[in-house]
Length: 263
Image (cartoon, rainbow, N blue to C red; front, side, top):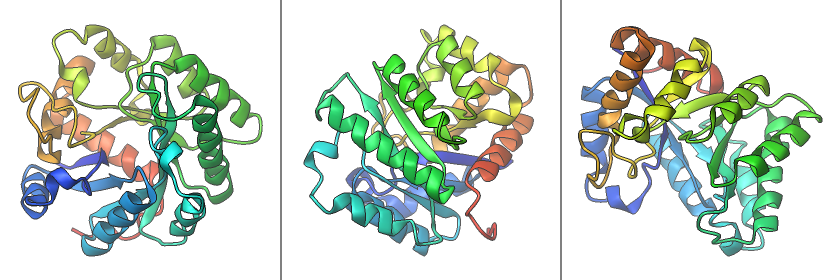
């Protein structure tokens, strides 16, 4: 069985004492590929270093909406420079967040627009964080789609059914994390049943969002993605093996700059 964790913050300091063991456990559990996702230039650089060390990891480079207010004056240009490396397979984590409001909302919108435009220029997919701001995100995605095709993923999706349908119409993938396994997430599971087979992805968003039956465990780690995969396979009425294969191929299709699939 092949699994693909399409959103893992493997560079996070919570893994500093155990990173090699965490990766080994994930590989033993069937996770054959990882996308290590950056949230600042420094974290993106660390993701790149991981991708250079492990042939089954690729990096994403970007500035998270909650970090853009703290970004140095030259930080965006340094992120852009990272896209020249073949190990960098995606942009972000970008998007919008009205829950924490750590950065002024107009500044978040500016950085989100930068990531989307860079995606449209380079062909690299962008990774969208969306919290308490679905209408705002959809407005910006519609505007961007008027410029050209969109290539990306709605990460750790917790929006509405209508929002998911519009994102699909705009050409995006929908990814689900551990929250879809929680007892009170029936509405989210109902949305997951509507996602076309070729547009659904899975992720851990580790070290956050541990799935049931490990909810509350910190740090979450990629080996636990099996629980999210099993929950969604049951929800969609297919075998775990078929769902794992399906989402693995979807991740492979989206992150097209991976090069050889070394084991």
